[in-house]
Image (cartoon, rainbow, N blue to C red):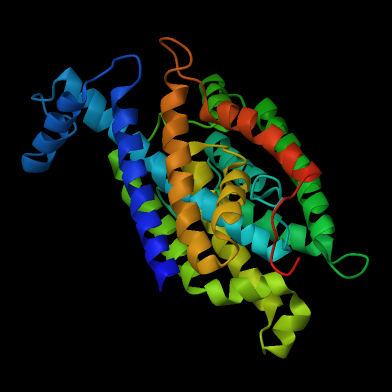
Length: 348
């Protein structure tokens, strides 16, 4: 009981930290605002919202409400999605070094989105065709990794990670090849910047769809906490409990691919969030997915909101692509995790 109260209190603390991080993100950048200005503008929008193209919009309203607020909310949503996807990938392969970026799923989504943007492939899927193509690319790589891991004997986490790294390299090469073939200078420039990761293109009309995909998926995974806990114990234990983990892995990969596909569509390539956040949360509260999933979601949201603010502060009068900053943080951490693991993972 006391432990549950502690987790609840910790959750509310993280929600408070996220709110403070969003307020800080609204205040920083090329143009800086005080907390009183932010509060007044946000309250004005809630009491009498203005349309995006309303002539009554002043520069302060435009910057805070139409530019910074949607990108910070998008950062929070995507941070939650990436972190929870990392938790699921690590449970599937029973290895804390797995995440959508390392397993090649993000690269598959990137390839699908690149082909869609430059050549219009998949327009029959409607206005969200880029996201659909990114999902198809992510899902194809997910099952490709599973197929490779089953070659030459029983699958294991090492084969999954190595297969993911190999397919990630293949997808990156094909993405570069597609960009090379494209005869669209503006499109190539857009793709190049987009592949570095950025929330600059976030708009209010994008948020509801991305939020529904991410949060419904997170709620589904949260409802699967018991199965995910069993996964950490291994297939033999699962068989004795009457669980078919192979079927669950396939379902979880499809839903994770859905998250990653639309995350890549909305913000480009952002790696290592699914590696860093679950690792830090697991060290703090343990491996029980009932608490690990919501705490990782909140941690991922806070991490990306702060990172987005830093990207607008590091270089004066310019914005550093968030993928660059995250990679500079994530790559050394990944090496550290390869060398040293100081917490238990499932039954290990």
